[in-house]
Length: 289
Image 1 (tube, rainbow, N blue to C red):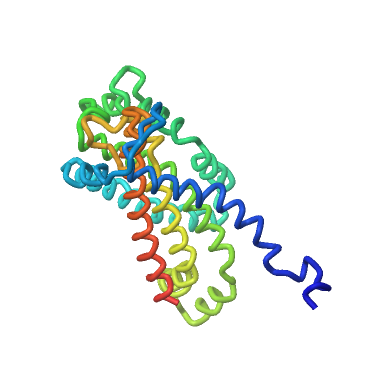
Image 2 (tube, rainbow, N blue to C red):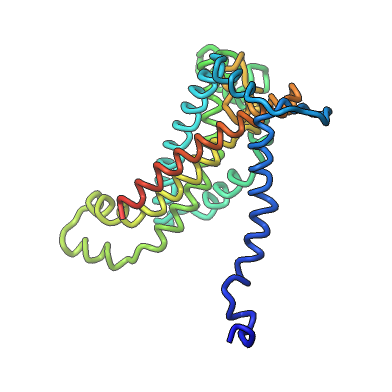
């Protein structure tokens, strides 16, 4: 019977291309990074030995915990405000207010702009020089210039704000798509029963959006954990290490110090942190269901 089966009737035929792509572009690089993290490999040197010194050095150095603290602040603030601002924007453009089409276009544009370009744009906005747009208006109002990129606390705030701007569009588009899928009959029935707009939002909109909100939460958390390009273009991780997130730390180890082994170790730590958050969010999603 199997000999006479047509190729289309064999389920595994359909997933072979997917397995091949995942193996070549995801599984093999992942295993290679994991292997390299247990070596002293360097760019430009072919020979290396297996060792755990990378992890010993990283965990015994207080710098790791500073980098993780910065990463959590950067990721936490970015995720919370991207969700809130994305949801707010989605609710507004779902009302078909004047200019909604322009807002949709702006959201997509902000999302697709490369991270390096985002960093350069915001560097111009934050600059203390004569072309600094934000400080120009601050001075126009009679206040002193703010050192957005030169004081550690301001630099982290500035990098986080730029990332929120970049990711809000993606979050908003996802929430807007979910809002369009909520049946109007639910709101009409609630209005007939005398439910206020707030109660409709709390008891209809949010429950209907929960699956998309959780999916969005997982995606933007992983995406933000992997963000380094906009931060590098904006502050290069400084001043000091005040804006050095873990993805940027891994980048610096590999491409600035040519330490492939330690850079891979930072990448593995970053992967584990992302996996932990993904598992927590997934558990929350299934519990809600």
